[in-house]
Image 1 (cartoon, rainbow, N blue to C red):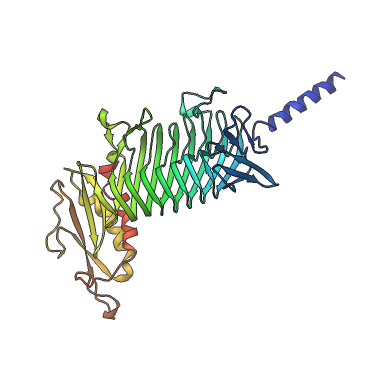
Image 2: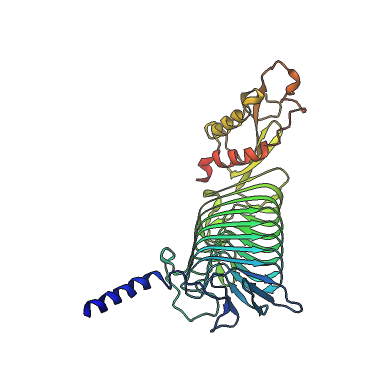
Length: 426
């Protein structure tokens, strides 16, 4: 009998290791301690407008339905429990916050947020929320982002339309989010931030393909490994490669980022800046120029806000792309060598021969790599067309009738911005 009891107890113990709290998913519901918090608990939910008045209607598969007020915060995950995947789709209505992960001591593998319309007056948070204002029901603060209690593996945010206060790719408070993807297609947003509000964010890929954005910056507070941002159609008032270095809500935006690249292909940026990395303006912090690159196509950026930066433009067969570099520094020919080789390789089919780097459009004066760059500068990449049997295949690239290279803007953006000028930004 004793052996049977022992065997039974061991079986139960082993089973318990495989059941709750590893991935505890349950029916969506309002939090019992805070009626303004709604937890989807890992169930896919849809947010829609009410028939009348502010607030929203939340529905889920199986006929689930609940009306909420406009001051509600909606979590895709759970309260202090773990879930695998969350899915929140907002088509209309008005809510305060949307959080992809869970609250307090909650872990989520993957979060998915899609905003098709409606209004979020506060924040859309891709990660989870470790502390959140007004909540004291759990011991949430680990004090160490490496061992954060609130974690998200992968956070995905897509905004197709709607009005939003702030989009955070990562999490809130001392949380941890490993990978972030943000896609902005349309909508009106005050702030888009690749990182979380604080804590740790690993790597972020941000695509700003449309919409109107007041402020974009990669890191807020806390720490972030890297961010890669492509602007291809959005209208942005203020763009920062690092943090904005401002103070808001009694907190300074002094986050640190390991590396950040911003490429502006199309759209409009009114004010662009390298921004800050690890400090604020009042404390003489480092500029993000030490860890970042800002590359932009013609007529996309109206103003550069950094007095210590100059614009270097690479002109190839009439196509131009620009990059910010530190004033007073030199560029070596070796630093442009990889870019030059990539360009020539891409044009082999068009029979071009490299002539050198020049300071003038007529390709008569070689560019002087021994002089420091203190003003906006254009470097011309000389390419000569090698004669071919059928002379109608291409025109002389050294005249105003240069063969159009529609792909050059995109190619140079990656080649020149990432491969060249490495010494200035690493």
